[in-house]
Length: 302
Image (cartoon, rainbow, N blue to C red; front, side):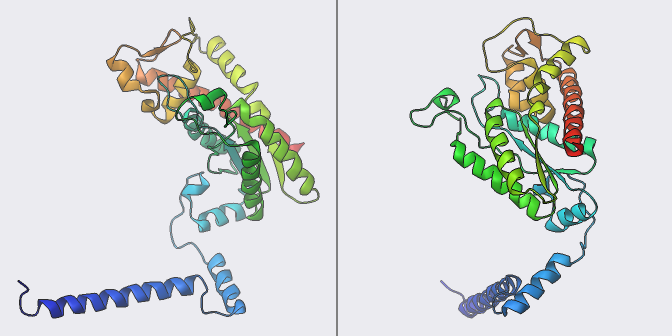
C-alpha cells in the first residue's frame, strides 16, 4: 500500500532526476560543440587544447595511462619518441598464458623508455598475424589464439604511427617480441618513411630487438649470470620467457599451481624460488632495455 505523500515524493524525485539528466546532456553538448557555429566550436576546442593541467602530472610512460594534457605537456617538454611494441595472443604450452608476448613487453617497454629518457610507450599491439585463418594453420589451430590478416595488421600499425605523428612525436620506434610480426612492421616502416619524406617524423623498425636481441639475452644469462637449461620439455616455453613474464605477474606462468603440483620448473630450470626467478627476469629486462635503447638511438642518429 502506498503511504500518503509517497506518490508526490516520487514524482518530485523523478522531475529532479530529469532536470539533472537534461543538465548533464546540455553540458555534454556544449563540450562537444553542439549548438555552436563552426568558428565558436573551433575557438572552444582551442581553449580546451591549450588549457593548463590542473593536476600533478602522472609519471607513467604508458600513453593510455595519461590524460591528453599530460601527453601534450610531455611532447612539448621534449618527449618526442614513441615506442610501438607488437606482441600477440597465442598458445604457449600448458603453463603460460596466451598473452605471453604482451606480458613480457609490459615489463620491457617502460624500461626502454626510462633508458631513452624522452620516450613514451604506445598501447601494446596485441592482435598480430598468427597463421592462416581458414583453414587454420600454426598457432591458429590452438584455442585462445587470435590472428589477423597481414593487411589488417599493417593497416593498424599505419594508423597508430600516423596518430603519433599527428600529435607531435617525431621518432616512432617499432619493436616486436614475436618473429612473425617483423615482416609487416618493415613494410609499414618503408611505406610511411617514403610517404613522410621531408617531414620531421620517421619510423625506426628495430628488428634487432627480436634478433639478435633474444639470442644475446640467452647468451648473457648463460655466460654472465651462469643460468642454463638442462633439457627440452617440448613446450613453447623456456626459462628466459618464464622469468621475464614473472617480472610482470608470476601468475601469468601459473606459478602457484605449479608449486602445488611439483611442476615449478621449465626445461630443467627450477623456478620455485620466486624472488630469485623474478630477479633473474629483472636483470634480463635491464639487459634487453639497454640494448634496445642503444639501437633506437643509433637509428635516430643515422
